[in-house]
Image (tube, rainbow, N blue to C red):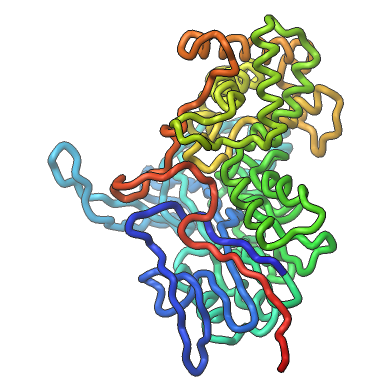
Length: 502
């Protein structure tokens, strides 16, 4: 086994984690931990195995719509009774030089996030949308309180039982490791390796919901649609010794049909983990150096260049370039893809070397809005970008989310390429490849005008500013470093060799 891994926790100065070794009657481990942990390892290795973890983002939170009663905003119906909300005092806020007490309300489901009005629908439509509450011909819009239920609430410190088991020597095999990982209510993708096996297990206290309550939208909080239990450990996403020899994860969905949290709008066919896979697949046989190299390369690549560009190229081929300059721009985009899609500044002049990066950076917002907004309307597009999913989580961000994910699936559908779970609506150009291609060429042409006005007429001389995406170390920006999208400050690189007997 070749093992490269670590959680992506951000860059801090001084660091939040430190390396430590523990050796005693029941402990023989080396790894990384942080000050609040009572002698337990976050990630590390024992005498016979190694482990690491990263955030999974599974769905452990639901919003419940509480029916208000008694003419009050602080009383609500639950199982036939009108209950009074609890009150939590959360200190004070300083507003305009004045100290204001900060309090919030709670229900049986959790803290109240705010209030909303219900939407009335005809009974048939309500049944179709699985909305049993607040419907009917005589329905009137009502004010409801929205409270949030989290399955790990009140169990956060139980998380340390997982770390304790890994540190105290009780884990002897991958089977033991899964049992340890199952102890935490938090959602982690956890990875294991010993001298002969590799494996992963996705943890979390995953609620089981009633058949007519998916958790994607607010749930009627009057008591008839409560969680029915929690997914047993045996049904969590997990695996050992896959046939292709690879376990690769970068906060992506760990398994088919596995539920993502409600705040993740990026479970799409373009994910940054594909950059890791692309790098690993360059080699017929990987070594510890090539696996580490794959991690380093993916950390400086642009997922739009690596994964999205080939489909964009196919779409542009359905239209006509407005000018020779625009044709050159698209050729530079393809060259960027062919050379790995890197955002490196190798000559240290403060500019990203590849002109394709400047072209994609400048054109992408207009491409995305032209592709999706006409169908969604401007107001919904703005809501998507401002609240739900940014058009592009640009460096020094993690490139996790972005509209390239939706665009790729839509473009492939319009082009007649193979697509899993097609969208019900075709967006770009109303579903016409010719119209969509024209919109993309227009966005590229506009980007060319912008870049030419600031960097001259030759696209080969255009560059994005590398200094703008340098990483700043928190909490106070005392030092910076070049952009890298990789595990931060806490990482393992190791392999196993057979024990040589004398």
